[in-house]
Image (cartoon, rainbow, N blue to C red; front, side, top):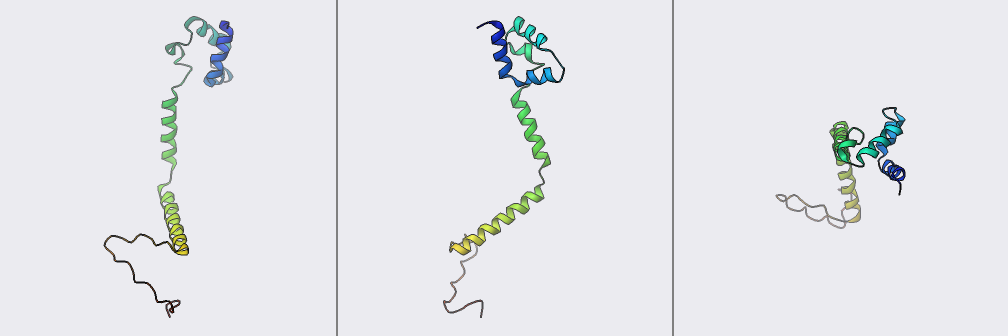
Length: 114
């Protein structure tokens, strides 16, 4: 494989290079010259290729900052209520707190607290 073909494969595997050219920060000629001289050495590409792990951590941190914890708590409470209702409808007993005895069963002939 020729050096030119190797550079094409290298550029395909690093979309940051394409972004760099499209934004005008560099040209394909400049990038090819760096590749021709240094190859795939990380130190030569540090200005063009970002560390994915650092980028992902920054993205996660940004997402966490935007989360409204009150809204999350409301959704959790709603989900718990829905699960409790489904449990009641299907006959599954909800777990009772450790210090509270289970409630006595209702008489068969008693409906709607009459």
